Every structure is written in structure tokens, then in C-alpha cells.
Image (cartoon, rainbow, N blue to C red; front, side):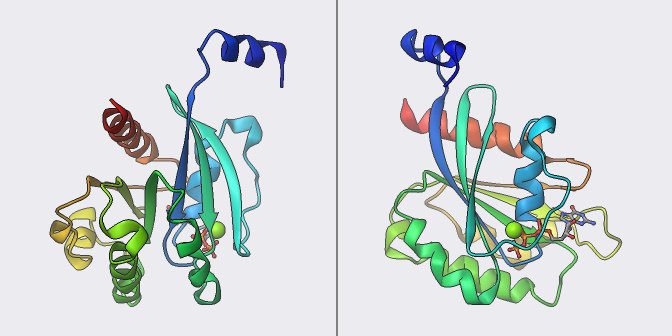
Length: 186
Ligand SMILES: Nc1nc2c(ncn2[C@@H]2O[C@H](COP(=O)(O)OP(=O)(O)OP(=O)(O)O)[C@@H](O)[C@H]2O)c(=O)[nH]1
Ligand SMILES: [Mg+2]
């Protein structure tokens, strides 16, 4: 830990740490999104499918996020639930151009929402309707209809259209998440 870090800790200036789970089907763009949220000198140039999960960090203006970037591949999805208890927020990523698998994304979301470690908590959920740059992409309004997001009544949620390659829409989402986490603590 650097001297500045230690000093800011002593002065109480260090950013609050929050644990976030990044979920969604394989190939939806989770790792690309998290990578883009890191400072440019910490970003990797090569994104490969996640094996199991990977722990990443990025900062917003007042929070320090530790993200569990889970693999979305079918064989690893049963890992997700082991991290629900410690998660303070969820980022759920959808490939807006993958109409065929939208129903699978909905099934996974419904399973998540009905899990005992999630069901009765007011945990904020940020949805990224990702890959908006692709010609086949449906709008974020359509994604929200296909996933029946209006049925989520007991948790704050928000959906942002994003293009993770260009980084568009990501900041709006993180700003919303930061507001939710801060208002929940006060
Ligand atoms: N066109 C386009 N491609 C994207 C976008 N976001 C991610 N991709 C591409 O989609 C592919 C999958 O991205 P990843 O970030 O590895 O997806 P993931 O959700 O982490 O996948 P798993 O780790 O297997 O669960 C990569 O080739 C990315 O370059 C986007 O907004 N637009
Ligand atoms: Mg990944």
C-alpha cells in the first residue's frame, strides 16, 4: 500500500468498498464492461471467456468496487449462488442482439430473483442492454419487456443501453449504482 493510500485511510478519505456481482449469459460482454471501467493503464487488451470467475476492481467518484466477474457459461452458472450472500449489488448483462437466448437470460434472472439469498433483500440491480452497436440489437425498452423487468417491485433496478467496446452507457450505469448504494447506507 502506498504512502498516499495509507494517509487517506488514516484521514478517513479512503473510498468505501462495495462488493458487486457481475452476472449474465456467456458472451454477453461482462468482462468487456468491467475491463472498460478500469483506468486505461489497467485495462487488458485481450478479453477471453472467463473460466469460473475473476475478481476485479474499479473505482467511481466515491466508491471502490470489488467485482466478482462470473463466467456465464452453462457449466459454471451454478457457481453464481455461492457469492449472492456477500454481494451488495448486481450488474446483470444482456447481449441485446442475442434474441434466441433472451429466454435463457430471463430464466437465469428469474432463478436469481427467487434465490433465498436474494429474494427478500433490497439489493440494487443494474442491467446493461449491451452490444447496442450491433445491427440486430433490440432497444433497451424491448430488452426490459422481454425480461419482464417491470415485475421487479421490491428491488431498485435500472437498465442502460451500452456498447462496451466503445464504453458508451457504462458511466451512466455506474453513477446510478453509486447513488443506490449510498442512499441505502444512509
Ligand atoms: N459488438 C460488440 N461486441 C461486444 C460488446 N461487448 C462485448 N463484446 C464482445 O463480445 C464477446 C464476449 O465478451 P466477454 O466480455 O468476454 O463476455 P462475457 O459475458 O464476459 O463472457 P463469459 O466470460 O464467457 O461469461 C467479445 O468478443 C467482446 O469483444 C459490445 O458492446 N459490442
Ligand atoms: Mg467474462
